[in-house]
Length: 415
Image (cartoon, rainbow, N blue to C red; front, side, top):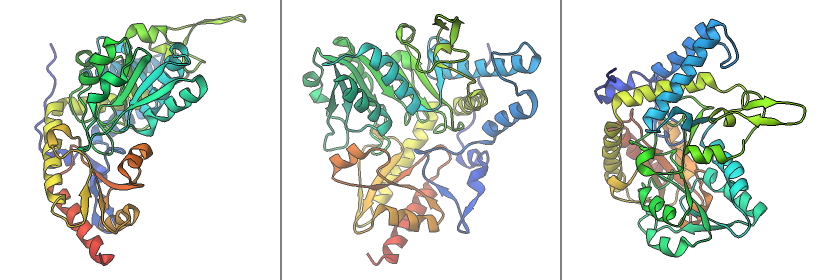
């Protein structure tokens, strides 16, 4: 048995692995607080991809020569690593996509258009990112499917007391974010999956803000599908993951057609390859997949329970420190145990875009706007917020820098 390497969770040592964190913005050390949008990349991920490009690069699944076989082996190893990371029962349940947005569109087009019909209902939540809202909105407009929403409670959690009323026999699909990208709200998926399955509905979980930050066990959750992006969890852009139960993936038609996803082609028709190839048409982003495999190695060595504990402590301190600032309103749950690493807030009298620009002058990178969640902001009565988000390389001193930057912005604007 091969023992997995375990790293000590030493943030200062971890930061040494991230070259971008050594950069400067406007002559000041970078304070990167936008990992909910995209995380920085460690040297180990950069090196893994660089090595492929420099030494064994060749297209996968297409050659009998050595480099093609080595690249294919590394690609297959990456799939197996990711399957282990989320505890999928087989690597074949891991489908590589460009990102979670593509995964959710794949499900809307392939599962939704094949299995849902006029009059069927899909249950979402008011917390959803556009990636898990717009595909279903389009499906509803095209097919006459009805959308219903689990509402937001006053504390920023989902009001799950509405489930008995929402989960009618017409509901065929339920989809929701494991963790909100705006409020940081962590929803226990089992509290939705179990009652949904009880009425025969299938369940999709958007895990973009969960898989990078906490242990995820898809078998324990018993979700039908789980989607996440590589670039938010130390991996490169252009690669994401869709997990699905085998019987559902087998029953779904392909999303894209072309090379490598076929079993046979004739002038009269075609038959499809087995999963996962059926959903991976054309040359895959295999170097990016290998990079994501290296990112999974890095996170596995840290242990995801330790990643979650580090983030929880940062959130606890962030909630405490920012709540001291006059005129600042924090959004979402106040309990760090049910909150991910995103802290969204407003400052009285200062537009979030102005605040973000002034923080940038201090070397502090935060996101401002609606964070691809306009329906949620409408529910909150807001058009935009500022968001600071944490990851494995952030420290309490960076929370202090954020607080000081906000205070300086208030002085600059005479608020």
